[in-house]
Image 1 (tube, rainbow, N blue to C red):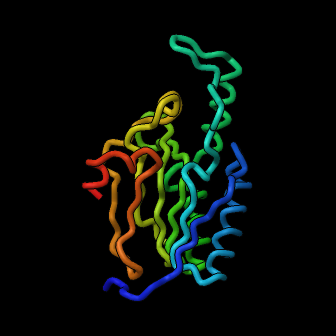
Image 2: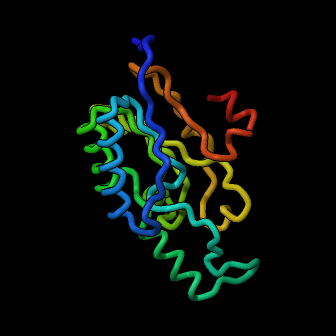
Image 3: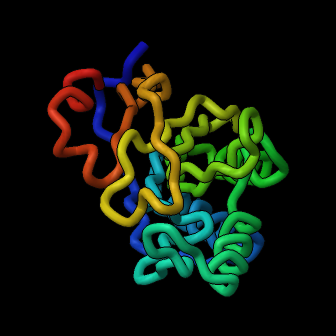
Length: 184
């Protein structure tokens, strides 16, 4: 049954610790508990909170060439991303369960089903019982994001019926995509 009474949603406006999944998970856990302590039932994190939006980085890429330094930096970024499922998602699940909240977490996800090398800008959903309820992979990375993130295929656009209402989300520029909004 969908809740019809008001509830508190916490929109976390904090930066991650770039390229450091462990430190970012610790910070997220603390912020989730802080939000729950204020009465939040839904906690929302920014795009790419785990483990950072790589603003300003080129990863040594120009058309037709990548530098060795850029390759090493990209590998560091890849290592700081998370697979779904993984110990990192288990930790997020535990934080949601401990806080008793619905959690929407922006994360850089490494593909563990296909190539193993593709990264996705993803949105992960957890329930207050700690279950991973779903994920959404960004459909069309914008501009130079295409150098580092793969495209989602549209199959990961859940709208979840919860006791606080329907939960779903789009990432950044997707909110300007009419068909994505219609699908949601």
